[in-house]
Length: 114
Length: 110
Image (cartoon, rainbow over all chains, first blue to last red; front, side):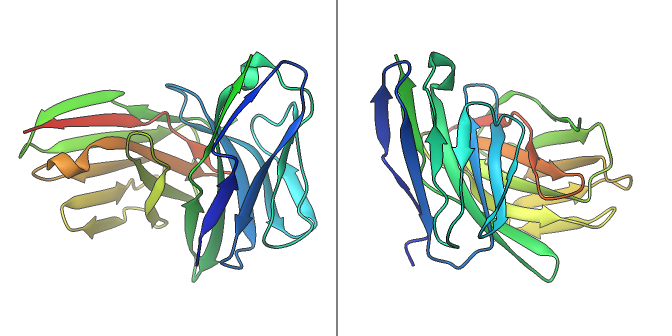
């Protein structure tokens, strides 16, 4: 299994540009999430999905869209990039077994918005 | 909304010393998770605690969940240089969303 994969690893955007961060998992996990990590801020939840066709907002959803058409893929779209969206973005997938959840993170995408 | 506070922000220890990081929530949690992130890496799941007063051990790591399910701690006995990284707690109140603490960065010098 490749686990959780993210592309690209690095990206530089100009203010106003749009782009899609890709995330895929091959573990057949129901749950997937997008987080952003800023220095000294920990991880903040952007959007999450509890299954194909179902998405919901997290703590910081503004400026981002998601969709979940398949179990495997959970892309994050930046509609009009702003410097405040400069961050490291992590995708994660998780499963729950006997009441215990295990979450796996991807390697991250480092985004710089100029 | 729910907030998860984590202290200390930084900790510098000599190899062999013990280390503890604490996590406190403003609300009762249904469960709490702990993660480790090495510099430049991604968070790696360590453990989930669910029951009030639960204590779990992983080799030199001891995780505790408070009786009121509002606080948790991670204790590392006899730190090693391989323990370097940032340790995060993440609490869940209800629903799916996890709220992460800001993390404790551990530096271990030989």
